[in-house]
Amino acid sequence: MSARIRLKKFGTKKRPYYRIVVMDNRAPRDGKTIEELGYYHPIEAEEKQIVFQADKVKAWIQNGATVSDTVRNILNKKNFSLK
Image (cartoon, rainbow, N blue to C red; front, side, top):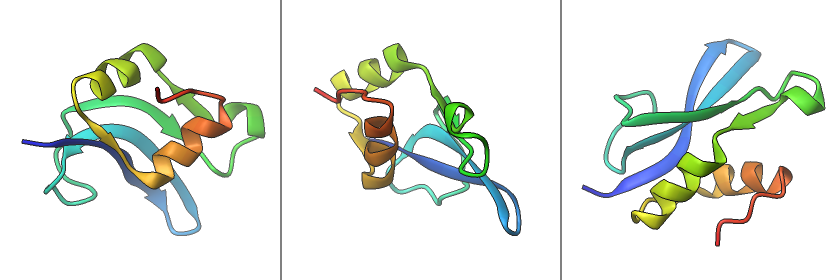
């Protein structure tokens, strides 16, 4: 099983919010998650938009999980280094 850190969509039409989750690479976007790492609310105020657990993200990356491009951009906004 290959794990991937990506977004899971919630909310209503024109009011989306996302959870940053670890999922099986083959699972559908809104399918079963392995672990939830944080959330991303694009509509909120800028300081409340992104919340995640950095230690868990690093642990998953060290265990071989890949990061989607969108999540990589979100983490970079918070100056989180993926290395």
